[in-house]
Length: 437
Image (cartoon, rainbow, N blue to C red; front, side):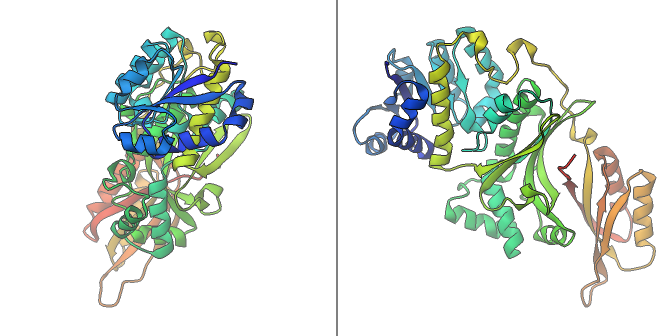
């Protein structure tokens, strides 16, 4: 059968991996897809790199729009990143009647509604498996494998950089800044790590998971996002003493009031499988009403793991591009006219357990004042530790774990605790999740 011709935009780490995997496994891929899939044009600003990766076997150009306009190209693979030029290229490819495969989580999280609407109108496919958790086929699992379920919640370690940093902080007792430098030296963190360490990258991915899990439009601006830059190594150590691990989690839940959509450092019981996902690995827990909790684990980044997802999308598009539009798997799992605009809850309305750490004068009555403040707001204590003051000091750490309560109640309690004369400085607050409900 006629080969499917692919135009590759960007031949950096993931683009190079995609070319390598597709070329190396071309016979196996053709057997799966029913016809050959070949990259026939590559666009990259670095023409020398493009020629080097492709071995001179493919036409290369520095004009990505020329590839998008090429009538011989069937599928455009967008791997240049960002959400300005990438958006223009994807929309132009759709306008030209071409299917699109992308690994661009920011593009989907910010402009997915526009892109999917354009694709639906034109009758083309936009595939984005590689946009979330690299080589883990989490999009296909939620969108197709769990189609019988009412998804209740999704929680995931979906950023390898922050997971590496937190793993090193726990194992070596180092400060965030020191581990970040090591992560940059090893190539796990970018020179500007803001998107990773501030939780933005994870929030982009979480928005996509929430959309396909609950059948809601993408609305990234409503996500609560908190990174790990202010996390103290002492809290990781205390959490460990109490039987918990700290992970940067993306969490989305369907509740009676609406949808929770939040990224933040989270205490997880150390006995949970996801608490033991270390280094730069990713893992996603999905709870369906029929199947219960399911766990997906693997490499969340890297050339060939991400390329695995890109090429899988190429195979899917090749198999289904001639199928009637109404018979295809919808972009966001639910039929386009069946999406629901559920409210996204502000963080003040979210409920969770809490870890609190405060510095207090070592004198009678302090604990009584703190517990009274919590009790007045119907916040019950699950566990508590009072550390002995260091030699020559009058203050000591008090660590409290609470049962589930509403965030706004905890905000009010923390403000009252910080106002106590015996409390020094700010109260450290981390959220906790059991991930077993």
